[in-house]
Image (tube, rainbow, N blue to C red; front, side, top):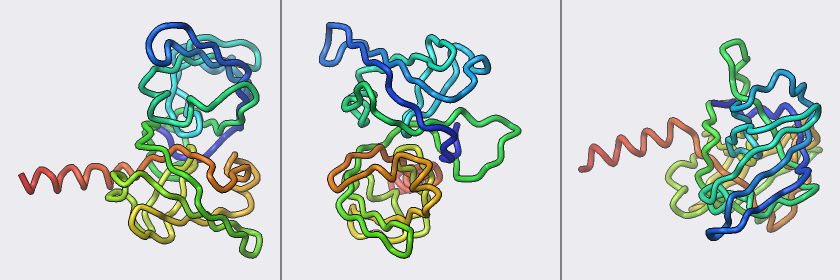
Length: 202
């Protein structure tokens, strides 16, 4: 479980794809500023919103293994050497809940369709997959590339968020351009409310 508050920006050091299947097994080595002495093998880390397990580590890097499912349902299939990614270590009982509850299970890939700078902040408009629209509401929470944000406006399957200068500078959101793809996770509560309503209709 995560909060959507980014604690580091990692860089993909290498991507190794084995043969077999549509994607094959994929290993990614990530460089980071974390003290990896405190990261256990098997630990969960959010990578631009996608929760992955650490399988190996060194002084300033660690490795993850990415499944076919994750490659096909996230932006991870586009990552290569030099790609910058938002990192967040898993929540502990001592951590401050600064964002909202985030599972690290990406619901779909969105696309940036408009970008406007307003008084130092940035207003971004994204297009989400249509089957995610039910879980996106004004003043509700959404996770974009692992960053917890508040939805300002919704129209069909498009929505807007406002990025303050601090978030723009300390996450990868400041590197987005029109057409950029992002990992999206809807609010956990919205997901369960929708499931409950489906059950009530049955």
